[in-house]
Image (tube, rainbow, N blue to C red; front, side, top):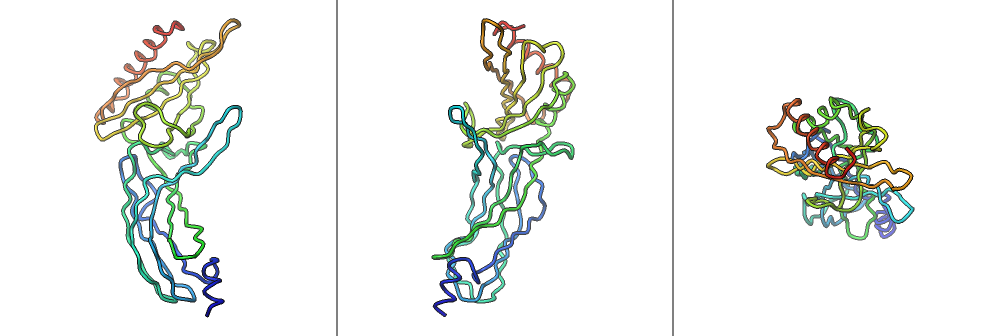
Length: 259
């Protein structure tokens, strides 16, 4: 029995965990629901806590170096201390709120390359090693976010990629923020490298943060210049939003002297 207990603590013969999502899709400000299924191992074990959290793959930059790391957020405990007997079957339903500023990972059935969000399940068992369970989650844009992306496409901005940067900008709630990158339309080529868009969403609407990577010349270096546009959740008319985005970009260019 002592040997079995030691092996369980090392992850061999201990309790098993499987998470089943009700559906793998969600939206910022929405939720993820499902059930965590626990199966007792070869020996009885004391479960300290069961919790679920979202996990994002985040890019970290330091000086000239960059790397990716996994960051959990929105953690919720779904079960407290208990004892699970050998072979016991136990199901724990859960509902996990999704933060409003959660990165989006797909639009119109197309996955945004570089985006990876998952649901991480952890079962804390005294003295044992828990590798956890990760289930992919697809985060779809809210209607206003989808409208902004379609409006930019209509203005000639071509989607280039997306990433999640570690750190905070003014108004961000999470320890990272998403940047959706666009190549400039023909009228801005030669002066602008790309447009980066960040959604800072809340229950009332969204701040659309516009960052322009300006192309450097012989006597000047490229630099980021930015602006913001506030939209409500009801702002879903693509033509109207496109007009406001075009005006915001032109105002930004006039203020910074590159239009």
